[in-house]
Image 1 (cartoon, rainbow, N blue to C red):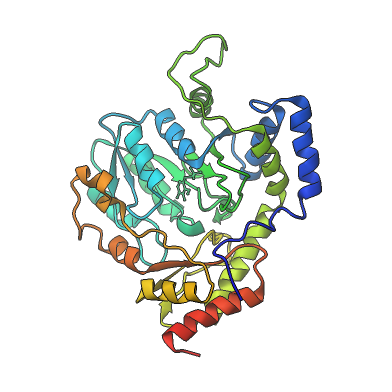
Image 2 (tube, rainbow, N blue to C red; image 1 turned 90 degrees about the vertical axis):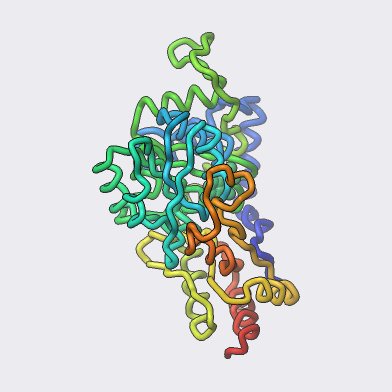
Length: 370
Ligand SMILES: Cc1ncc(COP(=O)(O)O)c(C=O)c1O
């Protein structure tokens, strides 16, 4: 049995009649940009998250960039983040003019190690940017307590954890801003690039809205009172996301069930399975194991027709574009080791039990366990 890493082909079949209606409405109105569908999605997502504002933008990357800039972070400022994340987390800090400062990650959650914050906090530290890796929410109680005590901001990268909760509160609503991605493979995936910023802060929201639309003044739209970008969330994407949002919790539960089944089937394999608490704090956007001989295992699975992915092979302090920051190999040993050992297996809503058994069976066969 062939098992692709991600199969998006069937995802929208059931929704197709509603998609047709929603897309036709956008076409009939001709409101492809700045139309009602985007405003409606923002309102519905705002209510889902329980925040004051949601601002739709055209990617998770731009959500981060606009949030960072709207928090007033720029030249001379430092932002503490993880060296083990998608590159956009780090590059948006740099594009805003600030300096990323890394702390190592925890092996069992892949999230930044809160015990290391103190050692790197300086008078220039303006914010902490935790990433909820693979769908697992970072320790937001410790992070918010520390940020409050040191008077620094928190900007959450929720690209991989849309819908997750921590102590009953949605990820992306703990900090000053939460940055979401609607990239098609994310838990709330659209039909192209898309993203959103969630915040309770009126000024941050207003700045994000102005930044996304060429710096247009909120008081007088013929005036531009700042240098902005063109990064709006298109109506067709918003129309699809509106149809998928009501099913988000259920599809996340499906991801969790698939992850737990993997954990059960891989119990005898010499791999480290992710801890998946059943309290909503992990939505298993990517089911990622730690294993020895990772590249050989990946090749073995590929030979069996099973797709996998390596997130992420190189930690950011060692990426050529970040070497100017002055870090060296050995600075973040946990992240460096995980980059050699992490392998993400197929895990998506609607995946059959047989497909999961096939993948787990192939992993066990590679290591010679039953
Ligand atoms: C952790 C993380 N941050 C940011 C992003 C950027 O999101 P986008 O691809 O929508 O720009 C991604 C998406 O891959 C991500 O996984």
